[in-house]
Image 1 (cartoon, rainbow, N blue to C red):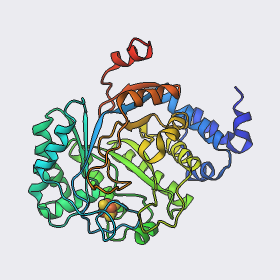
Image 2 (image 1 turned 180 degrees about the vertical axis):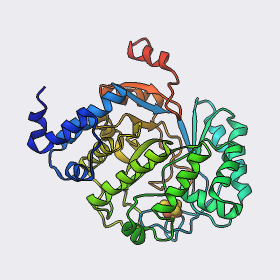
Image 3 (image 1 turned 60 degrees about the horizontal axis):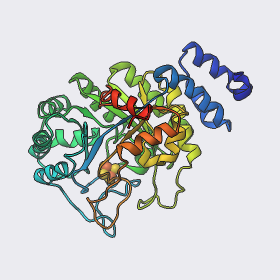
Image 4 (image 1 turned 90 degrees about the vertical axis):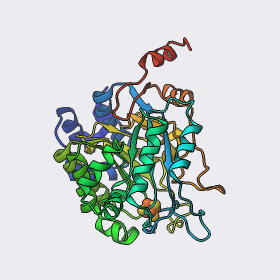
Length: 377
Ligand code: SF4
């Protein structure tokens, strides 16, 4: 293989940095976003991806619970919150949370992912009761819950600082924080699209508090709306700096913006080309993040298969009941599921080795995967 044939003169300087383990700079990030040579960018990202994870592609068996769609933040990119002519309002009681969990008790789910809108009237006890409800039905499951925006709200009703609030939530069963809420660090985008919600500095403060109390966390980047290339690069570099400081982030998920049902419906949907580029550039700039995820619900299973050669090592989960992106006529009842077998087939067809993981990327059932690979089941 002659890398210069794929990379050309333009990307060879980045290749030299990648193979010698030198940290990429912001200018490299901008070049990787602007070059028409997406194949070259993917080639570079794949070098990093394979040096970290070989042919392994991770997935998790998880269930999502969105406890309320009432929200006072009114983000312009959001189709999830209850509004006139949009989704009908709902708030799950802790008992209803239990019912949701019991529906899938036959599935060996290892992670429950809980997020919701910012409902100003829910008391602190509600959040503790939701955690307790999960622990009652599934005592061994990992609970990934409450974005930094929700943590700010919970701290407000708890009348405590972020660190104390997180400590109490952890004692009640919280294991890690999901990545949402930040969207993109740019203050310009913050002011234009989600001014009622916390900005990047406060999001980072919650992340630091999470690290101090021993909670791991995930990160995201919402792209494909009004952000510029410079703002994408700034976002990734700021996350990298934060990770240098805390070391508690497990993965980044670049999230493709879906305009349907939002105030930005006039914007085009990001292309598969853009999805792959964001995954590849994230892999290359975030040299201190162990994992880059291609979230199949947003990117489609088809793009996710290709993404496994463009820097992604994780396809997220089987996902029972995800309600954030699309709404149908029965709010709270939408099911988007890939079975475990479909997940395995998707990864195998892409030429990678499926590995079921838990929320800390520990292997769950390698023996089973080996049997699948050898055709014995
Ligand atoms: S993105 Fe979150 S905070 Fe913003 S409106 Fe939607 S539910 Fe509320």
